[in-house]
Image (cartoon, rainbow, N blue to C red):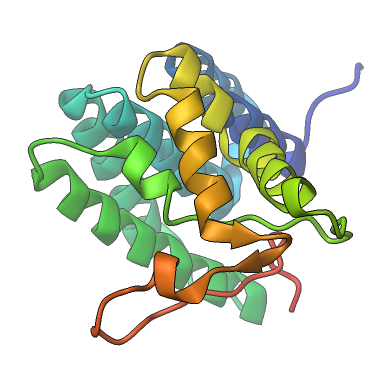
Length: 197
């Protein structure tokens, strides 16, 4: 016997590969998981296919994304009803994410840097300096969401993004009028980042 990754390990590896837009690595991870018991869990079969679809969509590989979404949907439909409240909530979350990604695939172009400009990730312990707020948010987007990889792949200009971010923040606070300057209602999703509320 040896040491083999469990379902949680596969999920973490998928997050790392996804943040780096490593489509081939994600596809290989799914193959590895299928050869183990790890895909017996809904989260890995549907979740890994969903991660593959996300990265493929961001890279403009729509056919790969559609195929992975189809596999994720099949996993969600074929899964047995769980007794766990967490599994029920996770299944619903995956179903909503699959639907959202299907809608995104219908759009012609994805403005990835534009999407990042509407995403603010504040670290748990924030500094108090003017420059620190924007730099901390920028670093959190790079570390947790793959922003640096976007720039490395030429999806946008890093300095332009940083300038816009500095204009949107005053220290660690959003400049509300600059970020949400329209008369339309503002919808926010506030989350802890780990699913713990």
